[in-house]
Length: 257
Length: 262
Image 1 (spheres, helix red, strand yellow):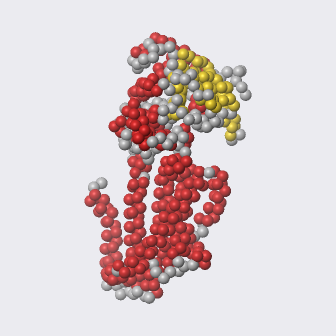
Image 2 (tube, rainbow over the protein chains, first blue to last red; image 1 turned 30 degrees about the vertical axis):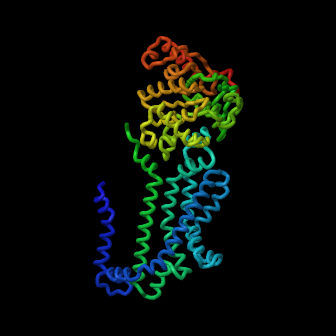
Image 3 (cartoon, one colour; image 1 turned 90 degrees about the vertical axis):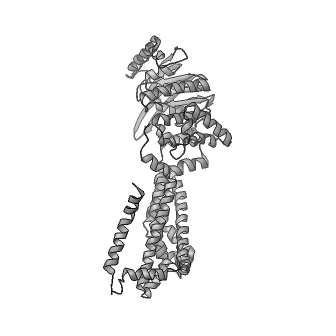
């Protein structure tokens, strides 16, 4: 597929929907459904560099901290649970219980325990994001190839070398799948944690606009959140390409000689 | 030197006991090229996995260079049948060959030299930075052989290594493994279901019976040491040995009622 064609396919639907929104909302007098032109005007007015520094960057910082912590914790625990059979048998019921709890429910509890600072919000993000990473890592580690395990045993590949080259790399396609599932959860929990207890941040700002009946500004915040989502998923895809090049290459089919 | 003494292996599970190996005893002297053939399902792979220390024996013992095998012994390398699954798809060819050396804490320069030498020996110097899945099946198995060579084993086990490659590649790989063996002076146990291959390659062929497995026959292959796909296979002695082993295996397919331990 040529670059132009890919670009067209990528942008066609968003452009079309934006155009439809623009036309449908043009000249709107409904207070709650302002025209897109007024939302975009509010966007430029609202998200100045000052505001980005004060509200957007702290949010993104917490988002990344919580997300990365969840990935590290999920992969570490998943590697242990997936490798050791009795540990898996021991913790499986507990995992099923814990992951069934919707993370937003934990927000008031975490606030009680650790206040309303950054730590609480990061903990909330971790509590939701860790599950897809953890469970996918467990499956990935369990499903590694027996012949490859035998190869490691035969050639004395043990310890950290085995962990890196067999356990984690073999599970990396599943780990990446889990991390991808965790990404939107991280954004959602970032916003929710800021809606409930915060004095700055993206979620807080959107709620403030809503309470102050600054409706176009509120919509512009929603738009910004969507853009953050797109940006993060693009970054994720770039990282995935580097990490899983071998996997996609292998799946694309063996080259014939 | 490789000693297998009264080896007995029973798989026990799901309420079913299967005797894979009945009673096996044989010795492969230092530096010998021995082939093991037998009817399919006769426990060849089980035997190999027990010798490699990947599977515990139910009774009896295996000794590699004098010490009893309880875990994968040092100085023993295995080339598996499933080359596609025994190479690390996320490592380049060179890194696949070097990984066991890295595990042995060999200095980087020495590692690189051994890997380059091993890859040259199997004729793959020009693809050392490719990924295994970019190579054909025969080339992947060459990488696995290069990994075994670079490891500098004293004992090399091969489990039907050429069963999954096409006939012409197979002939090339057979000659390659003969020359590798001649150069390294390694003790080589080569498991195959192909009688022609066993006779062509080995100095000796151990014929196994059907499960529960025992040694049905043990022949010295008195063909000239310089083997050639055309002349060796046309040698009347080759045909004679091949015929004898074939007859033994046909007979071995019917398990004897007596003489097998419970």
